[in-house]
Image (cartoon, rainbow, N blue to C red; front, side, top):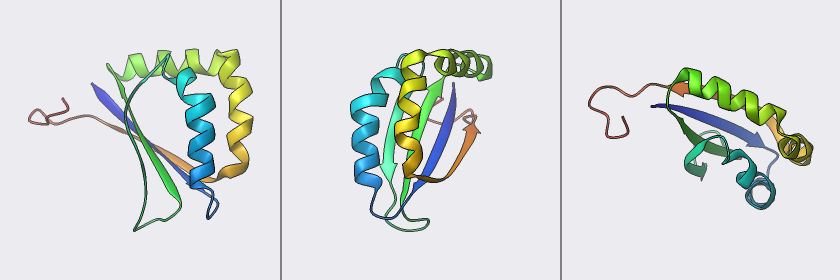
Amino acid sequence: MIYEIRTYRVHPGQAGEFLKIYQDQGLGIISRYASLVGCWTTDVGTLNSVVFIWAYDDAGHRGSQRAKLGQDADWQRFVPSILPFLVHQENALLMPAAFSPLG
Protein backbone atom coordinates (compact mmCIF):
# COMPACT_ATOMS: atom_id res chain seq x y z
CA MET A 1 0.00 0.00 0.00
CA ILE A 2 0.96 3.61 -0.49
CA TYR A 3 -0.78 6.59 1.00
CA GLU A 4 -1.28 10.01 -0.50
CA ILE A 5 -1.64 13.00 1.77
CA ARG A 6 -3.45 15.82 -0.01
CA THR A 7 -3.53 19.11 1.89
CA TYR A 8 -5.79 21.94 0.79
CA ARG A 9 -5.40 25.36 2.36
CA VAL A 10 -8.67 27.24 2.05
CA HIS A 11 -9.63 30.86 2.62
CA PRO A 12 -10.11 31.67 6.33
CA GLY A 13 -13.51 30.65 7.64
CA GLN A 14 -14.37 28.50 4.61
CA ALA A 15 -13.25 25.01 5.67
CA GLY A 16 -16.74 24.02 6.79
CA GLU A 17 -18.37 25.03 3.53
CA PHE A 18 -15.55 23.43 1.50
CA LEU A 19 -16.01 20.14 3.39
CA LYS A 20 -19.79 20.18 2.96
CA ILE A 21 -19.51 20.61 -0.81
CA TYR A 22 -16.75 18.00 -0.99
CA GLN A 23 -18.78 15.50 1.05
CA ASP A 24 -22.08 16.13 -0.76
CA GLN A 25 -20.78 16.35 -4.32
CA GLY A 26 -17.22 15.04 -4.66
CA LEU A 27 -16.63 12.26 -2.17
CA GLY A 28 -18.82 9.73 -3.98
CA ILE A 29 -16.98 10.42 -7.23
CA ILE A 30 -13.41 10.17 -5.98
CA SER A 31 -14.32 7.12 -3.88
CA ARG A 32 -14.83 5.23 -7.16
CA TYR A 33 -11.06 5.46 -7.64
CA ALA A 34 -9.40 5.75 -4.21
CA SER A 35 -9.96 4.56 -0.64
CA LEU A 36 -10.33 7.30 1.94
CA VAL A 37 -8.24 6.65 5.05
CA GLY A 38 -9.31 9.87 6.75
CA CYS A 39 -9.99 13.58 6.51
CA TRP A 40 -9.00 16.23 9.05
CA THR A 41 -8.95 19.98 9.58
CA THR A 42 -6.11 21.77 11.34
CA ASP A 43 -6.33 23.52 14.68
CA VAL A 44 -2.65 24.45 15.09
CA GLY A 45 0.20 24.85 12.62
CA THR A 46 -0.89 25.87 9.14
CA LEU A 47 -4.46 26.96 9.80
CA ASN A 48 -7.36 26.79 7.38
CA SER A 49 -6.13 23.44 6.07
CA VAL A 50 -8.05 20.33 5.14
CA VAL A 51 -6.02 17.13 4.98
CA PHE A 52 -7.09 13.95 3.20
CA ILE A 53 -5.26 10.63 3.22
CA TRP A 54 -6.05 8.27 0.33
CA ALA A 55 -4.85 4.66 0.00
CA TYR A 56 -3.70 2.91 -3.17
CA ASP A 57 -2.25 -0.55 -3.79
CA ASP A 58 1.00 0.89 -5.18
CA ALA A 59 2.31 3.78 -7.30
CA GLY A 60 1.05 2.18 -10.53
CA HIS A 61 -2.43 1.78 -9.08
CA ARG A 62 -2.41 5.40 -7.94
CA GLY A 63 -1.36 6.59 -11.38
CA SER A 64 -4.03 4.61 -13.20
CA GLN A 65 -6.76 5.56 -10.73
CA ARG A 66 -5.85 9.26 -10.84
CA ALA A 67 -5.92 9.11 -14.65
CA LYS A 68 -9.39 7.55 -14.57
CA LEU A 69 -10.56 10.17 -12.07
CA GLY A 70 -9.26 12.95 -14.30
CA GLN A 71 -11.30 11.57 -17.21
CA ASP A 72 -14.49 11.16 -15.18
CA ALA A 73 -17.07 13.66 -16.45
CA ASP A 74 -18.69 13.89 -13.01
CA TRP A 75 -15.32 14.83 -11.46
CA GLN A 76 -14.65 17.38 -14.19
CA ARG A 77 -18.00 19.03 -13.41
CA PHE A 78 -17.31 18.93 -9.65
CA VAL A 79 -13.79 20.44 -9.52
CA PRO A 80 -14.81 24.00 -10.50
CA SER A 81 -17.13 24.13 -7.47
CA ILE A 82 -14.21 23.81 -5.02
CA LEU A 83 -11.59 25.90 -6.82
CA PRO A 84 -12.82 29.24 -5.38
CA PHE A 85 -12.10 27.93 -1.85
CA LEU A 86 -8.47 27.00 -2.51
CA VAL A 87 -5.47 29.12 -1.59
CA HIS A 88 -2.84 26.38 -1.88
CA GLN A 89 -2.66 22.64 -2.49
CA GLU A 90 0.10 20.10 -1.95
CA ASN A 91 0.42 16.35 -1.85
CA ALA A 92 2.92 13.74 -0.73
CA LEU A 93 3.17 10.01 -1.26
CA LEU A 94 4.00 7.88 1.76
CA MET A 95 5.37 4.36 1.63
CA PRO A 96 4.90 2.56 4.97
CA ALA A 97 7.88 1.13 6.82
CA ALA A 98 7.85 -2.65 7.32
CA PHE A 99 6.59 -2.28 10.93
CA SER A 100 3.88 0.27 10.17
CA PRO A 101 0.37 -0.82 11.23
CA LEU A 102 -0.97 0.68 7.99
CA GLY A 103 1.35 -1.38 5.79
